[in-house]
Length: 224
Image (cartoon, rainbow, N blue to C red):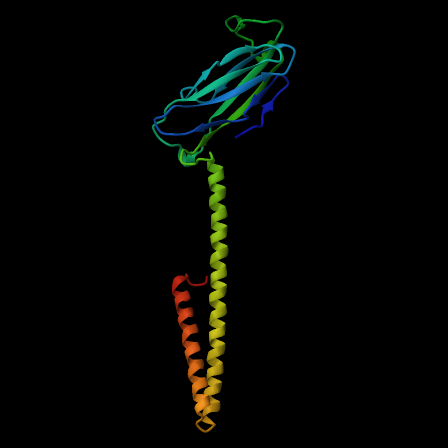
């Protein structure tokens, strides 16, 4: 859960981004806690780049000194998933101080106009869609990082298996060379029952190692 916050000279907002549990044909909402950290009355107004997708209440308000309020942003039911679960929507919260307590309906039209001469500050919030299949609420960035981590682990495991295969191949070649040397020496000697038994055991060991190497080679892709 997000515990951080963002703010300006007048307010702080928690959480610092809008996170929605995205499901097709389902409404979902995110609550923002807006706190006035001054001794003045602070007016705010919420804007978004996609006003048809979101329902904001209240979208305009006045917060008493050192007080706070909750803004609920509702994502309307959507008919399709966004590409890669990425959202480019943004929210803008405009704030300014008031000389006295003023009802929201009585705020002048130019309250948040920077050209009015009043000090107006803005905060921008991004929107994050959370996959419904993720119980921990991982975002598309989290999923991408996990996939990259899995790919790295798989590559390391594959490389280790290839190195083991190559090592087994080298050992088999060495045993084959020793076997050839033994055959040469055997031809130069008289038949020896003890030597015949040792030779049979050695050939059996070669067969086992060769079978292991063949099985390992068939289970792995060729070395690039």
